[in-house]
Every structure is written in structure tokens, then in C-alpha cells.
Image 1: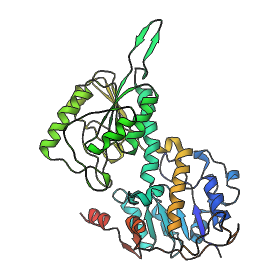
Image 2 (image 1 turned 135 degrees about the vertical axis):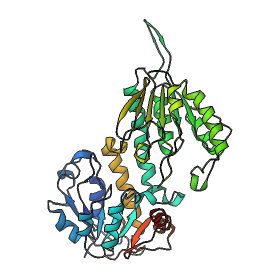
Image 3 (image 1 turned 45 degrees about the vertical axis):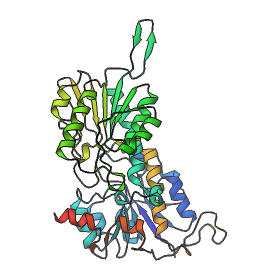
Image 4 (image 1 turned 60 degrees about the vertical axis):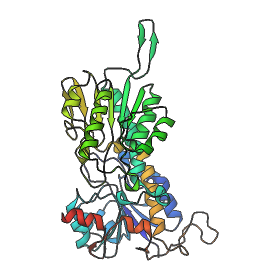
Length: 392
């Protein structure tokens, strides 16, 4: 008897991604998994039902969930879907418990073991499972294209019969995965790029991409590669330096965020008012409140000639590639749940196509990766920092 995996059409407004792409589904099927795939679930990402040739295409989502040992999703499912899972099922996907309390409550009531992909520890061993990084890559790329579309200026320097156009100055705030991808994309478009990050360690990566690091004299390197909280004096110092560069910027891509917490306010109203008319700010942190005081999540507003864009779920706008990367992250994490001696591998001489993998998933709470992203288990909220945040 094989493990049954269910993949359904995403419910969130505007979500175009799908948890598994055709290649991933077909590979899992070859390894012995039974895949229940809801008809049309991949349409918005550019995948037709016919491409999922080794999955069972189903229309009844309740029936699929009642049979699933593993339910995979992109964004947190509804309470109704969670309640339809059979006892002992495992759920894997993004949850963002601080924004989806109803989903967390449903997972607890259903005694569903849930691995929240956004909580995967950012360690070397877990890089291939890091959804935040894979989706941030897409978002950083798309953010620059949005800035170029909204800007009244061209990004590259052009020499024409009508004269020479200077390159646009692009300031990227935050040199994480999204920020570095934004830097690389802006450079490819011909922009003159400056980057701002309060982590001194980011300088080497920024400069390797051909951008210039804005030096504020503040180093706030924190645990896990994230920035620590700044003191009031440090905030004033970095704000003054950043304001100088924003005043000359044609486009700003802001990416600073702290998992599970509101985005830090970095761009003040006064800074926006000091920018040139026609400048554009694309705030990638809009979903968690935004880095700019004037950001309105999901809207594009204009303040004194400066456009502030607060896009939501940018990764979904490149749904095909985003889904492919998301699926690989899921499968790599799923591999950890299969006992090593029973885990089927593609091309393994011991097991051929169609043979069943181990039917009991092994949620090893001693494993650093599993423990780091295990949100609910046995009817309890077992992720310590999330439990503290929600209780607060």
C-alpha cells in the first residue's frame, strides 16, 4: 500500500501557484506514491491536467482529502479543507500562523501534523527546502520589472540621435535573497544600483553583483543571518544616510522583513517627500505592513509625485517557475519524513517504478530541520516561538 498525496486548487485570492508541478508529480508517482490531483489545479500556473499523466485527476476535493496521507498546499487551506483530512494525515505548505489563526486552530482540532514551510531553518542542510528563498528569488525579479513599468524613465543609459539618456539610479533596501535578485535584475536592465543593508556582511555579495553598498556606519548582524533590532541612535544615523541616497533615486526596491513580525518602517513620509517627482518605490514587504510609511498593501498610490507600490504575492505572478521551485522544496522536505532505509529514490536499484514507499511517515522531532518547521503535532502547537507570539 502506497502513501497518498493530495494536491488541490489553491483558494487564496489571486494565487496562481500550485504545490506540485507535473515533473514533481510524475517523479513521486514513479517512486510509488499515489497522487490525487484536483482537475484544473495547475491551470493558472500554466500546467494542464494532461501534463500530470501519472496522477489521478479528481474533482471531489472532500474525497481526495479523506484519502490523503499527505496534503500539500502553497497557501494555508481553509478550515473546511483541514477538517476533511483523515486522522493522522500530514500537511505541508506555507501557513504564516500569525496571519492565519483560523487555519492553526483547525490543524489543532484535526490533530494534523503540519510542517510550515516558511519556518524551515535557514541552515546549510535545509537550503534545498527553503521556500522563503526560492519564492523571494521570483519576487525580487518581478519587483524590478514592476518598478521599470511604473517609472517614467528608462533604466539603461542610451545614446541616441536625440541625445544621451542617463541610467536610472536604483536603490535596493535589504540584501537578502529578494534584494540580491533585485540588484542583479536592475543591473541587467542597465540601472545604476546602490544597496542598503544594516548587515556589514552583505557588502561582499552586493559588490559581487556590481552594485555599490551604501555605508551607514551601522552593523546590525543578528542571529540566523537576520538583522537585529536597532537602537534609537542607530536608527537615526541610518535614516539620515539613507535619506540622502533616496533623494537621488529614480527607483527604490524595498525588501526588508522579519519572519513572523511586522515589517520595519524604514522609509518615512519625510523621506518620500524628499524624493524627486517621478520616482518609484516598490515595497516587497507590503504583506507584513510595508517598509514605507505610505505603503498601502495591494495598492499603488502617488504622494507628491512619488509612486508607492505595495504588491501582494509577487511570486505568484511568475507562477510556473515559482511552482517548480516550491515543489522541489516540498519534495526535499518530504524525503526527511521517510525512514532512510525505506525511502524510495528515483533510479534506485532496490526499488523500481510503482513500488510502494514506507507507509508510515517518520516525524523525527530530534531532526533539526523537522523540529524547526513542525508547527502542530498531536493536537498541540509545538513550534515554541510561534506559540509565544500567538499567546502574546
